[in-house]
Image 1 (cartoon, helix red, strand yellow):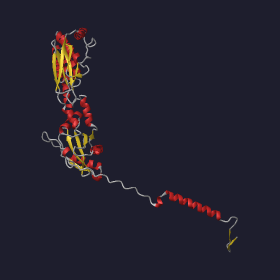
Image 2 (spheres, one colour):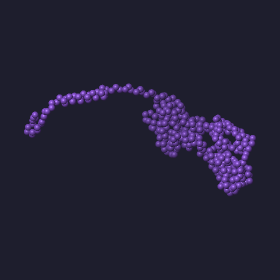
Image 3 (cartoon, one colour):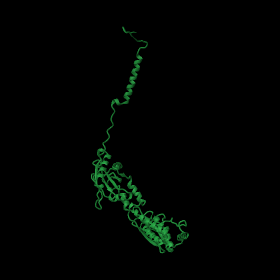
Image 4 (tube, one colour):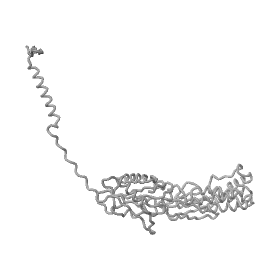
Length: 405
């Protein structure tokens, strides 16, 4: 990889036609070491982290502009309200409400909309439009049950108007909600515990927040207005393509999945490596894909006798030098179909273990034990037969050498 701050995820997988399952963890670790050695950062568990963030409703960087626009409109309305420019305040807050209404499904938007509805209710009350103010106050509580206006925040008459709007008795109507596109699905009304869809229940007239969700689908939310005659509402769920692409990444990295991973986890690219067995030898086939889903040509390296680390380093060098090319629409990097692991042959069976070797005669312990016993007995017998009481002496004389008994 170029010596710049590139953040990569490394995916190692065995294609359906190959088999190297026992090697996958080792392959992934070796490729990560090789990529880091070339000056790139690696995000461990990038797919799992991206899926967790996506499940929590994490917002991609490209969508942050929506929050900035909503904040700007809300701040404009608040400043105008402080200057008692009531018409200008009501107009800016109404535009903020419209923006939040279009993005209600995003996490945290209901609470932001609730705060804007409260302030718009204050502006409407000051303008003398009491009934519109009451509707705004009730909308704020429907969006966020914790919303409140107290005398610590507003004048006593405004606080009383808010309390009266919330406490006022209202007729009840029947709300029936259907979910289209997904089954089974769950429904939540005004923040209550989810119930299976479809659902029908009696609620107070006015606006209510309805949320629908199902595994593998984008959640949906709507603010529905129930009248005296009741209301039938339908929420349509669309498949969550990003979740599907993230789930498929380990099995077959594709440009769309890589683009989804890049958007959700903030990655610049992904190194995808397929590990397979060809003619009894482990082979690595890899490609580098960038955030746009463009890929380098496939690079192939046979591990051989030199070891996995050396093969991974060579593969990383090839991918670093290669340029990414954007394939035509619908085309995918054919890692799962790449040679030479398209038709792998199984590893030969290991040779049978050699037969147990028979010990040689001198390797038998009982032989040495018997020899020790015989030798000890012979030495003892010899010592007993030597005559006792005999003295031998040796005398040294420089002129005469002799022995006397």
